[in-house]
Image (cartoon, rainbow over all chains, first blue to last red; front, side):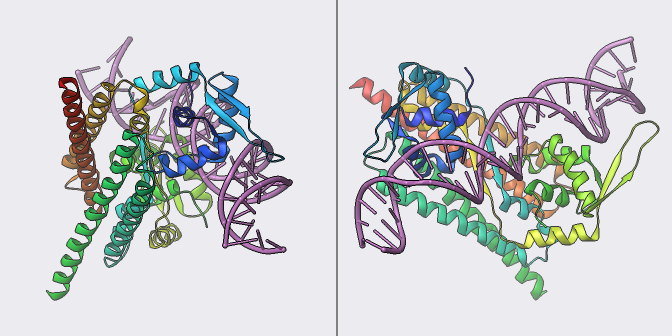
Length: 181
Length: 181
DNA sequence: GGTGGCATGTAAAAAGTTACATGATTTA
DNA sequence: TAAATCATGTAACTTTTTACATGCCACC
């Protein structure tokens, strides 16, 4: 059985309680988003495939005319989740356009670089704020490891923001000295 | 003109000198890989498209029967690169299966989690070693900002490895105390 | 003569995003 | 009654990876 990592995000989010596709998407955006995003275009088709494979089971919870299907993990689904969790982790991938631009920054006038670093700093600081907000809301109801990963996100983004600020200052200092000379 | 970010990786790597597709791939693996990867399957078709758009120009450098095409940035290509560099950075995305597994770790027995953290720590430590090796080789010939981004990669991975070790110890301590009680 | 590095490419599949389409219910 | 939120889904597209295919050249 070989599923995409996104399929395991779904199995994982169903491990404590049943959820609809919509709720899964909302949970992703509140929690795994910063290290594993997923869109409706993945979630709904994946839920159907997982049901065909017998890893989740959907049940109708429509209220009146509003349709709603809530999916629950089957015993096989739980076994598959545990099996996957027990395997060594694979993919680790970063795509950071900001670093890419910094990498090529010698093609721009030197004044541009401190601004790039400031922009990156601000982005990560904004992410910290967003994650802290989530932390405040989620602290009570979340599992321990969920909080731990959230804290990781907060602290890592803080570290990155500080790194940007340090380097920005260093560059700005260098530029002032060169102008003075 | 709207190109994929991978197209700009190519334009960027051609900014200081002409390179073949093969050399671009090698340069990516030595430099941008940890924050922006690219495969042959992207690079060769993208070079053709960029040539059609007039942003790069290929010239035959075959030696004997061995074919080789070296691409150089055209003036338009350089303008496009600078234009893109001047825009605010877009995409910033992480895909980390290790964090995902940690996030769901309450589905595993508690002894499993310190091992997951140790595995993640080791991966990041290995990345640090790889990047340091590149730094030693590249220090002389690389542009300032290339070194800066490389240093970022080293320091960030060090920070992550330390975070993993801190949390692993904290968990292990907690487990010993619970067993003793 | 074999291995490893240089070199170019394509086809197919997988993964993921975006935009669209539809409609119900709740709340201000 | 308008806006926000709940809810499901698909089609088209883009991006990226993987596997394969081919062959030269230098060195041991």
